[in-house]
Each structure stands twice: as structure tokens, then as C-alpha cells.
Image (cartoon, rainbow, N blue to C red; front, side, top):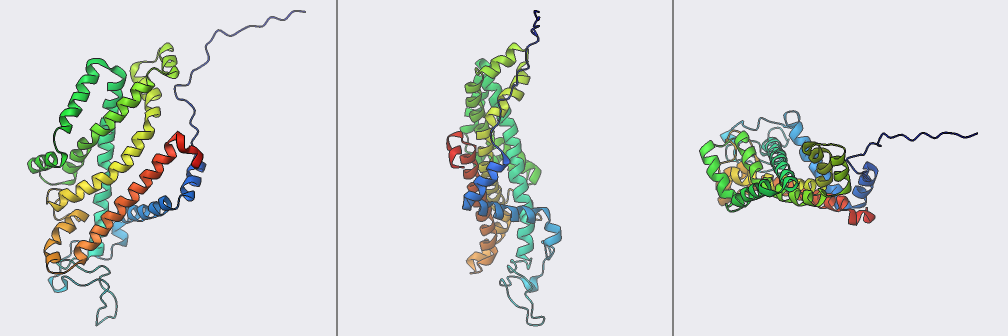
Length: 310
């Protein structure tokens, strides 16, 4: 008795995204195996906790002034109560340094993360469009990038902030626009390497449009190096915010920031009072160092050539 085998003519669905092999389990194993990234993650977690719960853990109002208590030394015991009133001392206006550093974490992290989001979205979008479309579109976007690179960023930021005025919402787009070129160049190069791959050709044969191919096929495969660059750029944005705040162009003086605290402590340094500048500088150094160490670990973790070490 013969049997008739009917073959389906419906084509099997083609996945636009190749399978991902990285897992949270491998990430945890790699993180615990490398001691320094674990310490960096702990430091960064403390800073994030300070920023999120500043109102609950801050012992005093960061803007409360008291000239009687100005320039109190760290861990100085009050003669009347026998308790330490100011853990990190006070600044030239009698404000509690510990409270100001806690609130300063909010601005520094917010500016760093939001600037990376703005620059990353803008640069990645333009880079993928330039790499995928090619031709005049590619030339136009890359020439805009070259024009921006011709200007020193810090001078450009100062010029813009002098016109717009200091403020967090003026500072974030300035820092974000200053970073888009890096993302655009990397995204463009990765897109050129990916646009002729088999899964992209399969997506075209299925009738997928350019936008769908760029979002669903190319974007997931160019994210790894962009994530690593973003981690380093968070640290760079924090340093830029501190530098501009030190120059008085970052945020208004009423908003505590680490760079602003350093700016206000210049006279105290000349008078031999080290703590108003030391502790905000230490906070900047530890935060940036922790982010850079995590960025190094993330680069090694996402590099397929080094996965055997994880």
C-alpha cells in the first residue's frame, strides 16, 4: 500500500536575530571570578543607593548654612553632647559636607546616565543609518561628525552653556551631543560588517523593510561594543559635569554637585583646610574608577574571543 507524503510549501520562519549564548549565570560566574569588578560593583551600588535614598539617609539639609559651625573638622566630637556632629566636617558656609556629597551623587549619576542615553540613542541611530544606507546619506552624517570633532568639546560646551545658562537640563543635551560621534562611528563600522550577512539577506527576501532590518536584525548585533563604550562614557560625563560645575557653568550653586563643592572649596584649600575639597574629589575618583573597572570587565565579558576565560 502506497502512502502519499505531502510537503508543505510554506517557508519556515527565519529569525532575524541569531541565537545569543551569553547568560546571567555566566555573567555572575565571571563577575565573582574577577575580584576587582566585584569591588567596583559594590562601590557603585553604594553610590547609587546614596543617590536614590538621599532624602532618607542624609543627616542634615545640604543647603543649611551656619557661620558659627563653618569649617568644622571631620569626626570632631562636640564638647557638650559628646557626639560627632559632622562626619566629614563642614564647608566655608557651615554646611554639612556628608549631606552635600550624598545629594551630589544624584546630580552626578543623573547627568552621567542621561547624557549617555542622549548621545547613545542619537549616535547609534545615525551610525546604523549611515552604515546601512551608504552613499550620500553616509557621507553627510560622517561629515557632520568630522565637523564636530574639529571643535574642542570643552570649549564648545562652555560656549553653549554661557548662552543657555547653567542647569541640569541644559547640561545633559550638551554632554550627550558631545558624545554622539563615538557611537556613530562604531555603529557605522559594525553595520557595514553586518549588512551583507546571511540573516540580513534572509530578512530582505522575506520582504522586511529597511527600518525593520535595522532595528530587529542589525541593532542587536552591534550593541555589544556600544554598551562597553557607554559604560566608559558615563564616567567621562561625570568628569565633564564636575569640570563644568567647577567652572561655575554646570548647575546652579543651590544644587549640590561634587564639582560645585570642589569649586566652593578653592579658598579653603589655600587656607590649609583640606577636607572640603578632599571628600568630593574622593567621591568623584571612586565613582569614575568603579565605572571604568566595570567597563573593562564588560568589554572582556562581551568579547567572544575571551569567553573561554569567563
